[in-house]
Amino acid sequence: MIQVRRGHERYPGGDAEAGIVSRHAFSFGPHFDPENLRFGALVACNEERLAAGAGFDEHPHRDTEIVTWVVEGELTHRDSAGHETTVRPGDLQRLSSAGGVRHVERNDGAGPLCFVQMWLTPQEAGGEPSYEVVRGIADGTPYAVPRAGALLHVRRLADGERTAVPDAARAYVHVVRGAVRLGDQRLEPGDAARITDAEGLELRGLAAAECLVWEMGPEPAYG
Image (cartoon, rainbow, N blue to C red; front, side, top):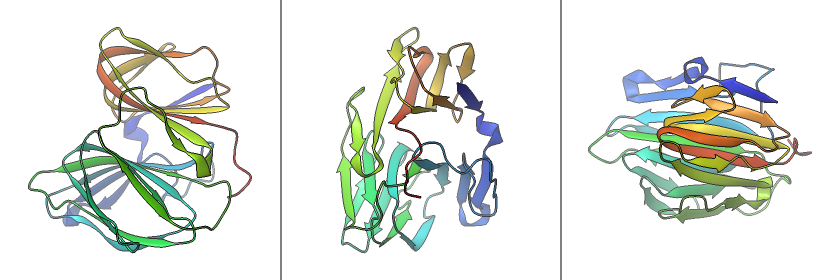
C-alpha cells in the first residue's frame, strides 16, 4: 500500500517573527492528530527554514534518534555532551539522545538555512547519548540507525534514472528536491510516500532529484 502526503498538507509551525518556518509531516506540538502519530519507527519529518541568526535555543531530548539532512546553508549544532559542529549540504548528522541530552541548533551563517530533521523511536529506552556526522555521504550508501532498526538511503537521480525502493515492512520516501515518479504518482519537493510491505517498487527521476528513503521494520514494540 502506498499513501502519498503532499508538501502543502504539512502542519505549519515555527516562529516567523523569530525567523523560523517549520513544516511537520506528523502530528507535532499543537497540531495533534491521533491518526498521524508515526509510520514505522518514524515519528517526525520536519522541514525547517531558519533565517540568518535564527535558531532553536537549548532544549532537551530523550529516547529519540534524531537524523538531520542539510539542504541549504550551514547548521551549527552544540550539545550538553560537548559536541560542537557545523553541518553542511551533503552531510548527515545523527544525535542519539538515549537517556537524555540537551542541544542548540542555529543558523550562524550569513545566508538562509534549510534542513530536514527526522525523529525515530528506539527499540529500547535509556542508554548513553551518542553523536555522529558523516561528511559528504555517498549516493546510495545506506546509513544504519541500529537503535531504531532502520536504514536511510540517500538517492540522487538524474532525469530517467531509476532506483529500487527497499523491500521492507515500512518504507518512507521524502523528496528533497527535483521530482520523481513512484507508481502512477508524481512526487515533488516536500512530498512523501508511506509504503507498507514494499515489494518490487522503484523511483524514477523526472528531473534532477534528491530523495531520502527510510527502510524500516514494523511498528516497534517500544514507544
